[in-house]
Image (cartoon, rainbow over all chains, first blue to last red; front, side):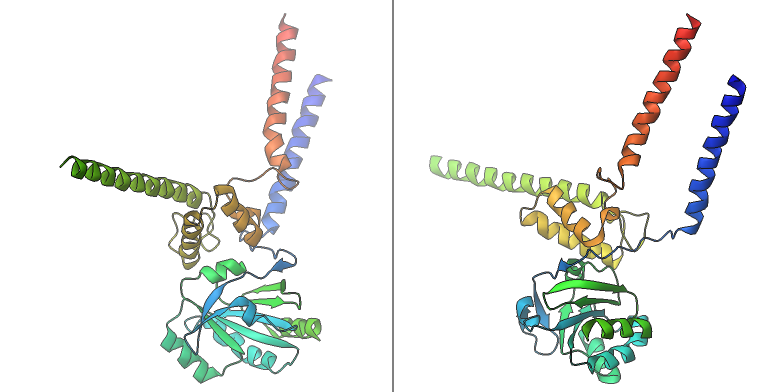
Length: 173
Length: 122
């Protein structure tokens, strides 16, 4: 009886281990932070890409519309891939695109915009990457959808694709 | 002459106290940075990492310490932005209670088994 019980305990323990490891095989090893639902946008002061003047965040997000914040850099290859989609999104009147130039060389960034077009209604500079951390980003490109109450409602890590553009269009409609 | 001596002593003591507070801040900074996970090179702490993300976080932590933020306030800030995973030392909440309670349960179960065995031997 005692022997049977020991075997039962061992079988249960091994099955438990098997389930844990089997589940572990299917889960991603890389952690991607989840968006904190309805997180407020940070308040900050940043340098303007064109005029070199400093601008406050409340001036950037002052209108009662949707905003799309896109973190980009001229050295970032996926940013080139998503740029035509951003150009397409910029034609939409229901949202304004704000570009956040991440750890970039200003001349290269200007060349990038001249070459591929400017989808942004405003571009701000984040030379040391701290502003991106305030937004909760950890790389480029990343795109944030901000609602009319200045809350981040969507966060897209990596380059946006056609499906994401359609999703954004549906939300801001 | 005496006034000059007092002045120099005061100046020196002020200088050293400043150095001490700097050292304290540096210690706190490295303690915090060692407890933050780098999200780019996962498995490394921000303290060890040289990635762009890590260097930005280092700047933010430095700024927050200089602004007088407490250690837990800095962790809360990062948790709010990136979730619990960014901190190596997990908090006790609904997602981590098994992690915290399992060793205790195993310890109690082990203790019970040993006690039972000892009783049987007697």
